[in-house]
Image 1 (cartoon, rainbow, N blue to C red):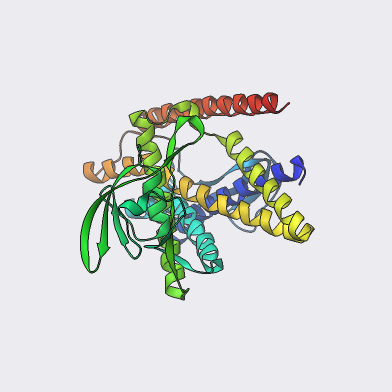
Image 2: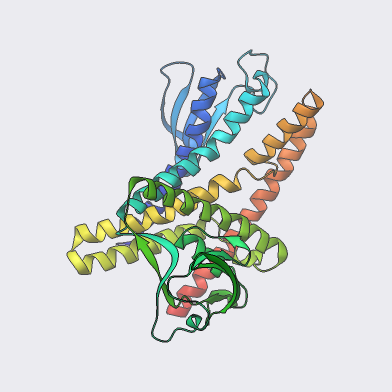
Length: 364
């Protein structure tokens, strides 16, 4: 696929994620009786708009961003249907709905992927690779229940917890012959990018037959794994395991989506021509989209100013005080948080550009 097409694919992914997020705010605001002045996809000047009722629906020039502008959302309003006049629980639902829609989108996409699997992975050891080292402790038929104290239910859970292990020496709990047995398992380690070491899985797990319940259950577990990854990454960032230079912003994410689309198309084209290339490219994009939308849903609920989670925090304070914080204080905190967020985006975007330039020069 050409570079232009893959960039368009990346922008389309962002547009879908933002549309879904804002649609959550829009639907719940309407159901709560809050007046919505404009529902927009994109930012900047309007390309076109229409207004069948009180709400303006618009498409704007720049295909990154979007908004659901509610009456009295960011300013005082005497309108009885203003956002600030609604009950606290209604406002909380409206704020949570955007992230909830992102999580729901991720769940639906992962349900589709689960339905395409031949078998649903478990945590039961099926067989070992030829040069395995874990078979010195693990046995065929062991059901792994915990990794480093964390409960694991699916093969995705197992892979994630092993990925987070820092040294390849893993404390496990397995079910063997009906008994729970604690084990210390040593894995081989491989070096990944940025000097992060990852354990090498040298065994296969048992797959079970698909049923509707197993497909749905696997999708929920898969979504839960993504949520754990978001929290784990935040903890790693705060504890210094990852640095700010390793974060990716819009440019980096666009690059990853473009690369996934290109590689999927190239592999599929060799196997079956254009349509197979298109199918594999779309599959790669959807897989990444499921991860990104869950990340967006979780991140936006963090109790930070300028995010929906920060506004939820203000609502919690209002509920305790039985009156809202003075608008000037909330505005100052939100504006400060917004500036810090923009600063973070600028930093990670600069890092993304440096990485892209370095990669280009290195490959030249």
